[in-house]
Amino acid sequence: MVPRRSDRTLPVTAAAVRFDLPEPDAFTRPYWDAAAQGQLLLRRCRACGRAHHYPREFCPHCWSEDVSWERASGDATLYTWSVVHRNDLPPFGARVPYVAAVVDLAEGPRMMTEIVRCEESGLAIGMALRVAFRREEGEEAVPVFHPGDC
Image (tube, rainbow, N blue to C red; front, side, top):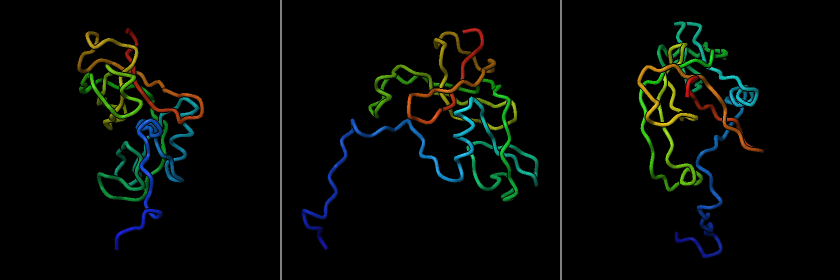
């Protein structure tokens, strides 16, 4: 069946859409509430003892559903990074260039993030990083990382 013209959804303009904001649900709400307070949370499995990030309702290592929230130290080391020079998705285009990165959290899990307050020339694999949070009025706080000496 072909939809009638009145049944079609109008296209959303790119200016109205944001691609950098999370969509919290009942399960992830504790994570985003903690971020708003400047705290990074992880999930830890009570069956195998391993921590994981991003938050899931089960352990990705042993598949146990016996997992709980745990406050992370906020310390990490830089595993890898890339400088993004072009990104057409709003609002990233206004932020280029920026450093997209993967960090190893002190508790073990790897996390995708952004490095802030440091030039690319100051980055080195294995360097110590600390969590910070990007937050604009009316938006969720998003964890980013920065080195202490940049």
